Image 1 (cartoon, rainbow, N blue to C red):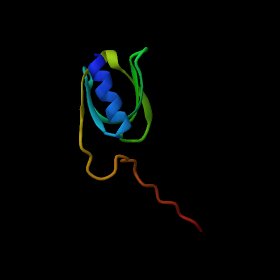
Image 2: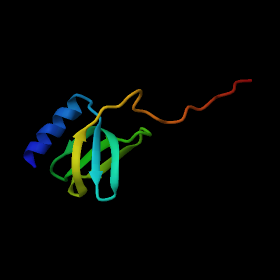
Image 3: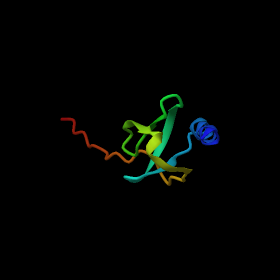
Image 4: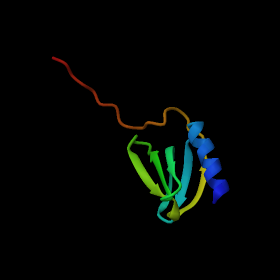
Length: 81
Protein backbone atom coordinates (compact mmCIF):
# COMPACT_ATOMS: atom_id res chain seq x y z
CA UNK A 1 0.00 0.00 0.00
CA UNK A 2 2.94 2.30 0.65
CA UNK A 3 3.85 2.26 -3.06
CA UNK A 4 0.24 3.14 -3.94
CA UNK A 5 0.40 6.14 -1.61
CA UNK A 6 3.60 7.36 -3.27
CA UNK A 7 2.05 7.12 -6.74
CA UNK A 8 -1.15 8.80 -5.56
CA UNK A 9 0.85 11.69 -4.06
CA UNK A 10 2.59 12.17 -7.43
CA UNK A 11 -0.77 12.28 -9.23
CA UNK A 12 -2.04 14.84 -6.70
CA UNK A 13 1.02 17.04 -7.24
CA UNK A 14 0.63 16.79 -11.03
CA UNK A 15 -3.14 17.48 -10.82
CA UNK A 16 -3.69 14.23 -12.70
CA UNK A 17 -7.32 13.06 -12.94
CA UNK A 18 -7.76 9.46 -11.82
CA UNK A 19 -10.33 6.75 -12.39
CA UNK A 20 -11.31 5.12 -9.10
CA UNK A 21 -13.04 1.75 -9.07
CA UNK A 22 -14.94 0.53 -6.00
CA UNK A 23 -17.46 -2.23 -5.42
CA UNK A 24 -20.15 0.41 -6.10
CA UNK A 25 -18.81 1.36 -9.53
CA UNK A 26 -16.24 3.49 -11.30
CA UNK A 27 -15.86 7.25 -11.65
CA UNK A 28 -13.32 9.94 -12.54
CA UNK A 29 -12.00 12.28 -9.85
CA UNK A 30 -9.43 15.02 -9.40
CA UNK A 31 -7.56 14.08 -6.19
CA UNK A 32 -6.50 16.98 -3.95
CA UNK A 33 -5.46 15.62 -0.53
CA UNK A 34 -4.49 12.24 0.89
CA UNK A 35 -4.76 11.36 4.58
CA UNK A 36 -2.80 8.13 5.05
CA UNK A 37 -3.55 7.75 8.76
CA UNK A 38 -7.33 7.52 8.22
CA UNK A 39 -7.15 6.00 4.70
CA UNK A 40 -9.14 8.85 3.10
CA UNK A 41 -8.71 10.65 -0.18
CA UNK A 42 -10.31 14.03 -0.77
CA UNK A 43 -11.13 14.66 -4.42
CA UNK A 44 -13.37 16.66 -6.70
CA UNK A 45 -15.90 14.80 -8.78
CA UNK A 46 -16.89 15.93 -12.29
CA UNK A 47 -19.49 18.31 -10.82
CA UNK A 48 -16.68 19.97 -8.81
CA UNK A 49 -18.08 18.77 -5.48
CA UNK A 50 -15.41 17.98 -2.89
CA UNK A 51 -15.92 14.49 -1.52
CA UNK A 52 -13.95 12.05 0.59
CA UNK A 53 -13.31 8.51 -0.51
CA UNK A 54 -12.48 5.71 1.90
CA UNK A 55 -9.42 3.96 0.49
CA UNK A 56 -10.49 0.76 2.29
CA UNK A 57 -13.25 0.32 -0.32
CA UNK A 58 -11.12 1.12 -3.39
CA UNK A 59 -10.41 -1.73 -5.79
CA UNK A 60 -8.15 0.23 -8.16
CA UNK A 61 -6.91 3.73 -8.93
CA UNK A 62 -5.39 4.58 -12.30
CA UNK A 63 -4.58 7.82 -14.11
CA UNK A 64 -6.95 8.84 -16.86
CA UNK A 65 -7.12 11.44 -19.59
CA UNK A 66 -9.84 14.08 -19.68
CA UNK A 67 -10.80 15.70 -22.96
CA UNK A 68 -12.06 19.25 -22.51
CA UNK A 69 -12.76 20.66 -19.07
CA UNK A 70 -12.87 18.50 -15.95
CA UNK A 71 -15.83 20.57 -14.73
CA UNK A 72 -19.05 19.33 -16.36
CA UNK A 73 -21.49 21.48 -14.39
CA UNK A 74 -24.24 22.87 -16.56
CA UNK A 75 -23.82 26.48 -17.49
CA UNK A 76 -26.53 28.68 -16.11
CA UNK A 77 -27.83 31.58 -18.12
CA UNK A 78 -28.30 34.78 -16.13
CA UNK A 79 -30.73 37.31 -17.53
CA UNK A 80 -30.13 40.92 -16.57
CA UNK A 81 -33.00 43.33 -17.16
